[in-house]
Structures are given as C-alpha cells and as structure tokens.
Image 1 (cartoon, rainbow, N blue to C red):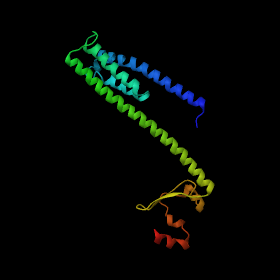
Image 2: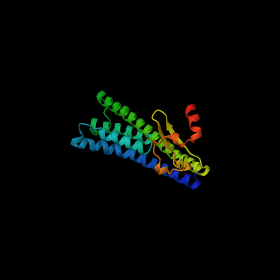
Image 3: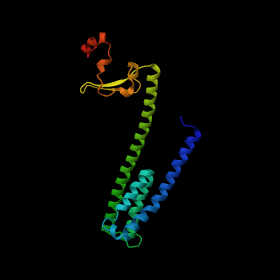
Image 4: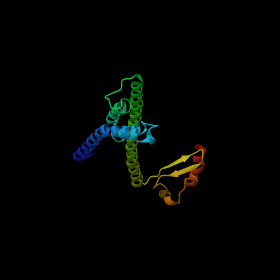
Length: 196
C-alpha cells in the first residue's frame, strides 16, 4: 500500500510529465517540420522526423499530447511547406497531404500509446510476480517444503530454490537433468512409478 505522500508525489510527477508533453507537442512539430524543410538530406522524407517526434511524445507522455502533435504537424506542414507561409493551402492536393498526415500520425500515436500501456502493464505484472515469487520461496523455506517442475516428455527436473536441501542436496549441486525418481524412498519407488 502506498502512503498518501507517495501517491501525491506520483500524481504531481504524472501531471508534470503531461504538462511537458503538451509543451513538447506544441514546439516539436514546428521544429521538426521546419528542420525537415530546410535540411536537404531530409527533403526526400519530409515527415519522417515529425512522425518520430509524434511517436516519442506519445510514448513518453500519453495519447493526448501525441494527438496534439499530430494535428499541429499537419497544420505546420500545410502552412510552411504547402502554403509557403500563407495561412493554409486549400488546394485539393494540399488537403490530401494534410489528411494523409493526420491519418498516419493518428495511427502512429494510437500504436505508440498502446505500446506504452502494454509496457506499463508488463512492468507491473513483472513486479507483482517478483513479489509473489519471493513470498513463495520464503513460505517454502519456512515450511520446510520442496517444489520442482518435471517435464515428463524430456525427463527434466527443475528445482525451486530451497527444495533440494530438504533431500540433503545443496541447491548448487542440483541440475535440470536430475533423475527425480532418485528422491523417492526405495520402498515407495515401484508403487509411485507404476502410478505415474
């Protein structure tokens, strides 16, 4: 459970990231389009840099700033590259370019946001798994119990840490190829093997 001060700090941190994201969403599209127009090496791919910026803004902040950067990229490209510094070019070709920028940029923003959310979910699941694994290991050691996984098709046995010691073998001496039947008492071995 998180403390109220930690929760408040987390909210403030997220709020600060969002503010920075919206500032970047306003400034970076203009910089990207301007740089692409005035850099001869980028003229063949005028929006590559802008789409990278859209992806970065979305990945590091959220979908909102990413979509703002898409709209502003389309408007700046129309204004600076197609309208040649007039307000906007409304020719059919310019409008088509603007719509294509909006569609592709929106798709990139949505995909990046999905990636950001999935990555966050995976990090949370991994953290939870680590906590549960540690708790299970502590419980096994405290209860003096053993755990292992047996792959019957490959005949492999993999011990959980702490399990082999119960049978008088240090964990470091066990391997995934140990014969699990060697840990069964001799008088029970035939009965158990017959049942398996």
